Length: 302
Image (cartoon, rainbow, N blue to C red; front, side, top):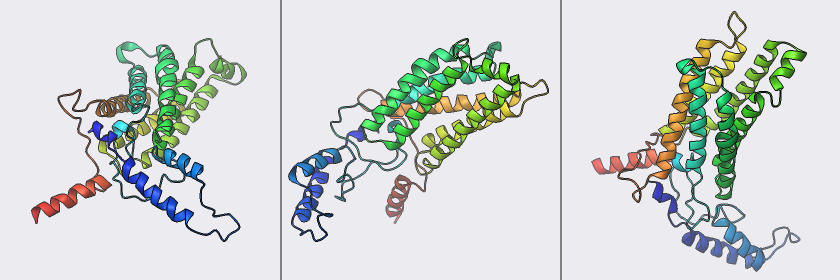
């Protein structure tokens, strides 16, 4: 399935863009040059950009097929495959960086084997979940994936900011709260921080409602993770500490999000050239791909 991302979409697109260009250049401009046709140089530049999904000719209707939503490419809707792109698919890298860092932190949030301090996660959050995921997000922007660029870059920023906040003896953010206000002030502020990410993840979750079940499940479990952790810091126990049962529940859903991210990453890595099997990614019945499959099934039964 992952190999379909390299489907040729440039030939028909070029022909459609060429046709529109010649139609535009043959039209007289009667609005004082506001609707003037592109020069040959401008057209060539726009044509080159359109092959990568951006620029004024990117949305020229040329009848070329689009690929269905695919978590392995971090695409929640129909998208154009890019042939001979200079970047590899950055989604599995970003998903893997997110998954491993989330996996370790979630185990700590669940107090696995009595480990409750997240100091070890600081290194992961700086190096893998932060820097590497941020780079993957920038590469998503280079291949024209707005959703992937927004999500991976933002969560890379989340891990970097998380590491900055919790660096022991480094930035002294927690110490500043406790010395100037109270110990609970930092917990409240950190709860606000987590609830903000809950809101942002909800926005991304909405954009996956017509994608695949695995892709939606990733953001659904991550959304619950942020919500529960935020509540755990804001609704503390009698001792004034983050509520242990709620934090553990957040850790549980964090583990589910980590494995969902790894699943989508594997779907983007495994194809018929390197794997004996292709990772299944079921589409929602109301998605474009789901409707197409239902229509084919209905025709087959007639």
